[in-house]
Image (cartoon, rainbow, N blue to C red; front, top):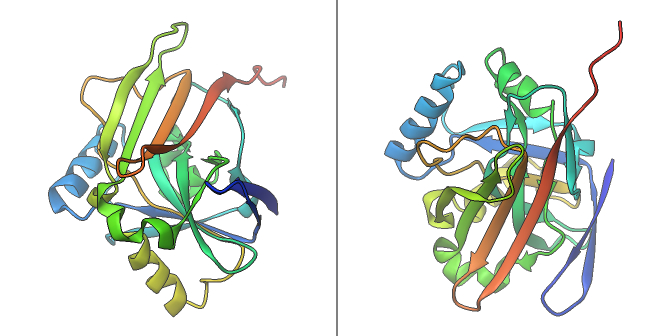
Length: 230
């Protein structure tokens, strides 16, 4: 099980021993955005889902706060998302996340691909109740750095209002008996910008609160593993 520590704006820390990790998929409020995401994935060979929204169980140890993601090949990429976290007190936290996915494996099974890479979470968080009145205005952005380059390129730029809200998922988890300490749910993502290569050497994701100017950020390098022997 993964042990995560989140720092709140007042400087206090909350611990989470992750016992359940879930990845939402195709979770846009706009059917046009969902169709766009389905089309994006179809371009790289991923079949359309049978149910929208989807929910994929992921091995809990894949919830990580890390600056490095090792990969076995070049066709992997992240996604800008928020994460709903139930901390050790039962309080609901909100943070930035990036679901790093094996796109080659995704063509054979989305659930398999979600278990082939980590869900990277930021080290800061907000209490959900503190931003509940302005959730839809929270910004969600991602930048990628192409391999061998130093400059970032904006690949995703939207708001949390484009996705099903945290309360939707909190209610769904409560009905399933899973809204309990140690549960982490990743939100699903917003569309990527056309013409930007998602198979990048670095990802950076930012969840912003325009009302306060506060930003939660994560970043990590995508590091190729050595070739296998044998």
